[in-house]
Length: 421
Image 1: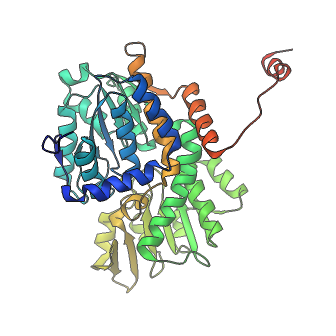
Image 2: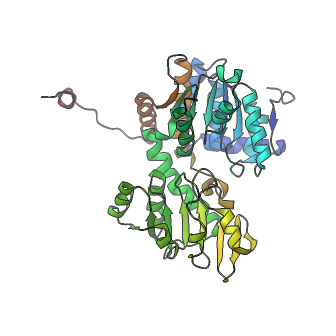
Image 3: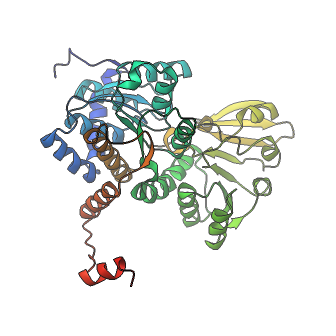
């Protein structure tokens, strides 16, 4: 493609394109599952003529998904799912080197973010690929002819699925949505191993805190919370878990963690990590009990898990003491350290999940987009599980890439499992 004919875009600096292209290629080398799917897409072109709108974290890993979809014949438009997760060089590389429409700026304000989402929707996408449901929810809020051109969507997060299921309960969700976040491979790799490693990586990069010998409080013991707790314990931290679900709380206790209320944990913790998908998980009543020097981080999708309004109300001063650390000085002299303005810490303060993890997530995304397109008109509106065949295909490709062979059941074993006698 001639560089004089660039796609629509709004990125920070096109001169970063070469650096971004190198970064994209490096990540692609660690994504063998997506590479195999991309090779097949390039041959079969299952997405010819399809317009795809994506609202995802604009990283090198996401870039490889965009390229796989484009190789499948799709016209792809991408905007950022989080203002602090955009890698400006990657955005430039996608536009200048690969001809992908990108509208994303690291640190963009809310108005710019909304403008970018709307710009992607103005392209009338047939399929949406969401991380938080902003594209699909905004499309339904706007209504109009664009909804009639929607084949369906995919959703990457628990938070997004909560929003979409509420839309469905109100009878307003007009297309099928595949719940990628709930696929077995996604839960096992992305949430547990991806968030488990990358959340702690972001915390350590931003604060340089030593986890060994300190107490880390995990608020939320879903798949992601389990991963964070495991990695923190492995690094030598004492781990406390806070939960509202009795089964998950029991699981945490049986795994050997202390389990208590958030108010009790507030007095004990040195580092706090929220990963609940809810809002105001840590509030003024918790901040008032915390130790001097406590570190506050959020690993949930939206920046609502820490009540920043109440934190500001308690503070007599705020200072940026390190890049990505705002220190809130309270009236009694205690200081609380907020990381990355309460945004998702693994992306805002780090590089997000390793490429080897996103390989599985984006392999699922690519195959789910193909599933929606090839079954256009056959799927009913509403949130639906990822087909088991797609889950199995991605897991099989990943095992092959790792050089792992597994057994298959014998005919006798199959019969034993399927028979009622």
